[in-house]
Structure formats: C-alpha cells, structure tokens
Amino acid sequence: MSKPKPTTIAEDINVAPKEAQKKLREIYSILQKAAPKATEAIKYGSPVFEESRILYFWGL
Image (cartoon, rainbow, N blue to C red):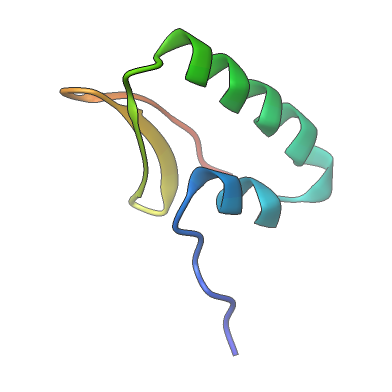
C-alpha cells in the first residue's frame, strides 16, 4: 500500500529523508520571510512558492 502524498509543504518536509529535514525547514523559513505574500502549494509532486508565477520549488 502506498503512502498518501503530501498536500502541504510541512507534510512534504515531514516525509523527506531525516537527514534533509533540518535544511528543508531552514529553506522553508527563509522563503516564508523572503516572499510573505507567496502562496504555498504542492505542484507536480514538489513544494512551490508562487505569486503570479512560481518563485521557487524543490524536489527530492
């Protein structure tokens, strides 16, 4: 049985490899401060920050 796919960036970080989670949380915090008006979403299976376009995304 497959695991449910993350629907939020926080969920995505929590299912990432343990060794990556600390850095992903740091990146997430920086992006929230750098783009406070950005919308957070999961697109194409990756977390994204977007306004009128995608500003940043990451994938593992």
